[in-house]
Image 1 (tube, rainbow, N blue to C red):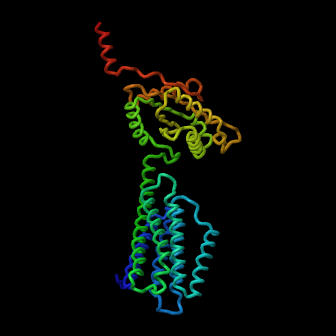
Image 2 (cartoon, rainbow, N blue to C red; image 1 turned 180 degrees about the horizontal axis):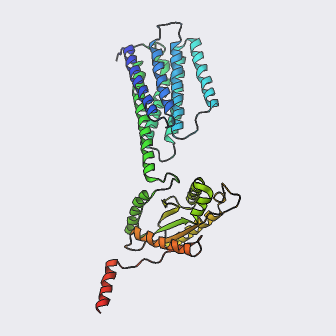
Image 3 (cartoon, rainbow, N blue to C red; image 1 turned 90 degrees about the vertical axis):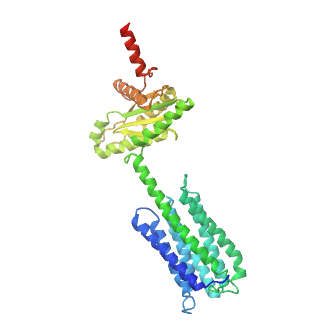
Amino acid sequence: MSFDIRTLLVAVALATAFCAGARLLLWRMHPALPGLARWALAGGFGVVALLFILSHGAAPWLPSLALAQAFIVAGLVLCWDGFRRFIGRRPLSYRQLLVLAVVVLGWIAAAQMAQSMEVRALGNALLVALLSALIARDLLTAPEPVPLAMRATGWAYAANTVFFLVRTLAADHSVGTAGPLNPDGFAAFPLLWWLCMIIAVTLGMVLMAAERLQADLDSQANRDPLTGALNRRAFSLIAEKETARARRYGQPLSVLIMDLDKFKQLNDRLGHDGGDALLCAFVDVTGKILRGEDVFCRFGGEEFVALLPDTSARQALVAAERLRAACANESAIAADLRSTEPFALTVSIGIGELARDEDIESLIRRADAALYRAKGMGRNRCELAEDAPQETSDTGELQSAARAES
């Protein structure tokens, strides 16, 4: 199969330029997202690399292929660093960048001095395969759960690794008799692969950014902006599902209602910033005590709610006591930001277990009554809610009417 390689190069360069423009626009639209600036710069490097390849032979004194190779590798390094920043990993250090620069420039210089297309092609393929493998590893081993777009982009780089490893094995058989612009069919295949990769990777970047923005929106809708705990809306949705599940499988379900003792006085003493810090510290302590499947929510002000699936009231009381003791003993909470006089932040907790045919609102009311009973008995204590009535309100009204008639 024969191709006009220069025409194909122009087409690939134009597509790369459009993709670079899309990355630049993505960065300008969302400059706060980490890594996007590196992606945009890497796209520009790809365009420059293709322009150097197109200029091969036009200026014999210019090492256009060596410069193209340098820009290709630099673009991949920028993409790698951008992906690491995006997923929250440590950016590439200056030492790592220096080692990469020495290896790349050394290989390019060796190929340039030897005037060897084989050495240049072999080095380029190996470097691209290595960097693609490193990018694929970081994307596919990101902290769980790995978003779909990130996983797809990682597999695209894994495919790129395989392609250039095969290209390395084929270098000795193809480049020796063919120049970089020789329309032998095989020379066009890497350009077509470049076209597919640049589109796939750019699309992956756009979708990764969209997934991150959607996750941020979901978090803002479901999380308390100060403490990061679930808000009341999100808690209500989850609580309804957990209540239905508990009824369906006959499993216990308990709730803890927590209120920070004398928080208003502490907030007045420390100021609003100090009070906010205490709330955040309490949430941190609670996160160390509760299980991963427990649902924790800031219900309002200094009041918090925790839903404990598969937990009886007595088991919930044990967890509540652990939380109360941890809160009272937490030295970080007891740090006064404005006064040398020490203080301790304590919590009172009401505990209730879901009764048969009881809804979540009724359970929370019973646990809330237990909380106020704990407050009235001196604070810094846990109290179990009274048992829920076994009859519905309609049945109670009928029985009252029957007694009146009798």
